Image 1 (cartoon, rainbow, N blue to C red):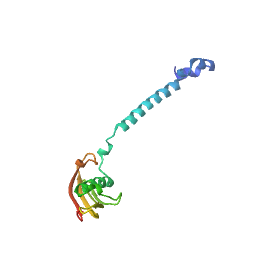
Image 2 (cartoon, one colour):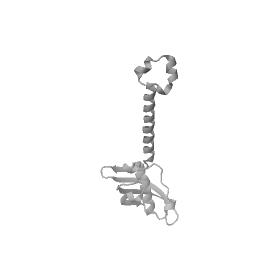
Image 3 (cartoon, helix red, strand yellow):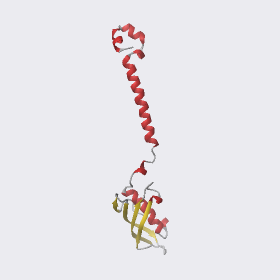
Image 4 (cartoon, rainbow, N blue to C red):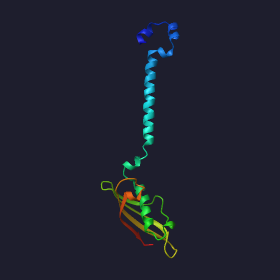
Length: 147
């Protein structure tokens, strides 16, 4: 039914036709259904995209986390390593994907003494998941004094 025809009906005729015959109701209903469908598609599309972190360069904190893994690989007793949570220095060149991370570690040495050591890791991000060691190439891992 067209809106011009709807306007010509009296109140009793409008009530007898029912709400679904009203021209504005049809339009609103169609747009509402279309909006809901588009909204659901967008939400499912976003929730399925679990690889968002693969398409960006690692942050300084992420580089620090992976650098700790490389430092542990060079320690005599890596299970005893204690790193500061957020205390580190970084020099990052995002154009070349070069990362230099500096911090300290406390770990047991061979004689069983807890030693605090400064370390510097120079590494290059080659792509992929930042938390995967194979996504990084280490240029140098310097720990002083050596444990």
